[in-house]
Length: 165
Image 1 (cartoon, rainbow, N blue to C red):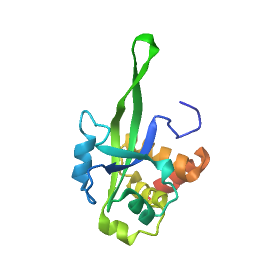
Image 2: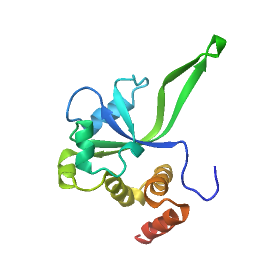
Image 3: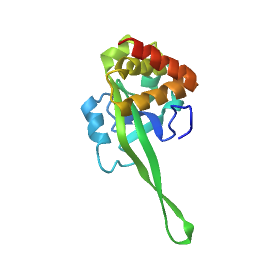
Image 4: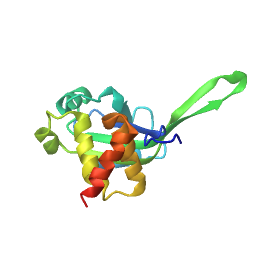
């Protein structure tokens, strides 16, 4: 890993949409789909966080056609097989060690004017101290990559959060 950074390249952040035509899903619905051994291409849509960063909550919900929002932080990789004549065949994405943040309809209605990154940032700051070390690493990565822009600023944020004890 690179020195002086919390940004782990293997950590990816997505907003997830269950692709079944329904407008509302529960946290259990998301867990069920994401815990499947073999996620089929059309079961879910994984929207990279970069594609919605800075949008208001109401804009993201409209864009996705959903009432709730689910942020997925995960260790993510895409495997590839090689066959004769070096033709590359891509395999479905493999998602492991995911941490999901689920926001229900009522909460989002109250916070619809906030930007999506601010909503996630507030949740992660609130949950930081009570999270396990793996989750904290993922949160620090999110803070550096999407909020703070530098290791030093994220380090200051973590100190500030730890002083709340």
